[in-house]
Image 1 (spheres, rainbow, N blue to C red):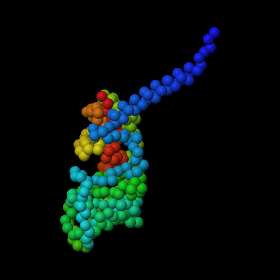
Image 2: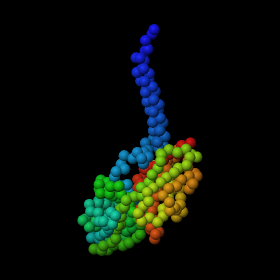
Image 3: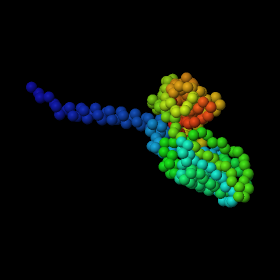
Image 4: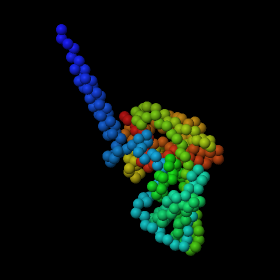
Length: 282
């Protein structure tokens, strides 16, 4: 009687594990190819973000124009003053600068123990057209926070020698915490989303961003006009019920903004320029 070939069992197990590993590797390679923008750069869904432990808001805001290569406005006897607060508490040590008139940058300033900053300027006519937070400073001091609400830019003012003007008052808060069940959805599949109820919120508005290439300027399109964002008092919904034009091969991100009883925005979900939430498959 022939003895059982027990020595074949480890080989069979090894072959099965190798086949499983090969299948998994192929799946990961296919997923990696799907998660590339048109320029070939890798895109990471929010669940995979490597830098999610730092500041969750924008380091730079410069609406409609590139802020790169801006010349310094120089120094002078006029002064712009502003402040920075976290949940209403003064934030010292935050390094920042402002952009003026769409073409110049101020000197860097750092908030003092009262959360205030002062920036010297030459006398002249100005409009604040943006700002920049030093990345290292923001990541250290504003861990897990976002900007409270959009800032108002492009209001013109004049400063004489020795005169003090009002700069931006930065306000930072805890973001609306969101939950997404998966990072890939078929073109006809429901897209359920949830978020945690925000303290002091009376209702929420939703924006969906369509992203063909998160690294390309102008590669992000808002689905809903600013004044027509869907409104809800619930903390969960199906994005497919709000919009049925999701495109295969495009990335998307959704933004939740919380409003109080006086219709004032009090917080939104954390975001960075290249963040995406999910990809639509054919």
